[in-house]
Image (cartoon, rainbow, N blue to C red; front, side, top):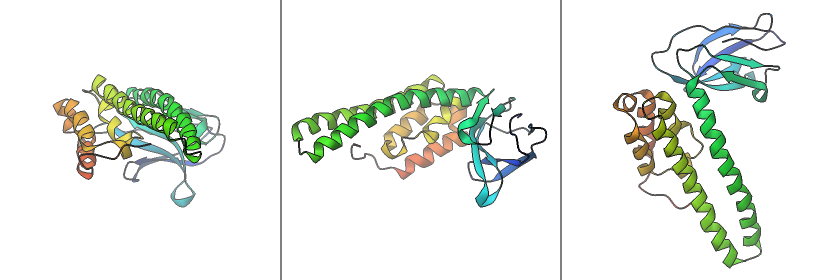
Length: 206
C-alpha cells in the first residue's frame, strides 16, 4: 500500500476481529505494508492505536497490490484501488444506496402521513416501503450470484447493511449460491453463523 498524508503517523490494518496484523509509519507522505494472506479478508485501515485511533478505510484485501490515497488522514478523503473484491463491494453498495435513499424519502412521507392519521395513503406507502426493502435484498442476492465463485460474492452477505431484514432463508439461499470452495471459506462460514442467529421469518420492515 502506498500513499497520502501530510503528517507522520503510524497506520495499522485491523482484521474483522479488531486484531492488529501489521503496521507502518508514514515517511515523506507515504507508507508501505507487505505480506500475504491465506485467503481474502476484510480489513480496517487505522490511523493510531487504541481509543485515539481513527478509521481511514474499509478494505477487502487479497494478495494483489492495493493503493490507498488521500489528501488528509480522514475517512471521506481516502480512496482505494487495485482490489477487485473491494471494487465489486463498492459497486453493490452504490446500487443499494440508490434504492435505499429513495426508500428513505418515501418513509419520511409515510411518517408524516402517519402523524396525520391518513391510514389510506400510509397503507399504500407502507406496502411500497416493504417492497423496496425486498428489492434491496433481491439486489444483494443478484450480486452474490454474479460472483458466486469468488471472494467478491462470498463476502457481501456479511458486509451488507441489510442484516436486520435478512431471514435465515435469505442467508441460506446466498450460501447455497456459492461454489463449494467459497462455502468452505471463512466468508462462507460467517454466512452460516449469521443464518443460525436468525428465525425462519421476520416481521416486515418499514
